[in-house]
Length: 240
Image (cartoon, rainbow, N blue to C red; front, side, top):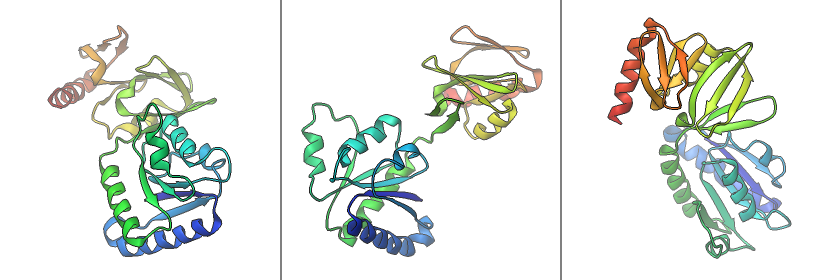
């Protein structure tokens, strides 16, 4: 598990690193090793938060504070558990006072007690087991983090793959269509139609050995070889 600690109090940050190291040693036979990266502010972490499975945050010295940063991570698309460590700021009270509280956070009081840290990690691991995995789509300009059913279809366009998302966004990035498919083939809704097209059967309206029609009216060429895989994927989807 990859953990990010973002705390502008050096002593607190080092103490949490030590506690997490001990937790890692005691749990590695069951959950594997904990890999921890520490940050003294939000600037660097905000550039690439997606690789982390768990966050510990306490920022009190300036802007953004810990709650503001946690909210920005959620708005960015981070779904990993976030634990707000309460010292000068009572994050739980601050969050509950907001007019809209759509996100879930966990809270841990400082000074952090080993038993409470262990209980928080237990809860985080349980949440992680139910988390929907995300797919990274990195274009020349932006990076998108999407779920399986955010993707409607993908087609080859020269040296690029063009992906249509359910909200209408088109994302293009440099790769082969087959390479992109192999990176997402573990998702049961994805079907490779040809070496130049793939689709999500959740958006399938009709199909034949030579083409598929999607619910948005788009028609994609298919191949007889793919026909049985389309049929199987659709059957599995309809049973969900």
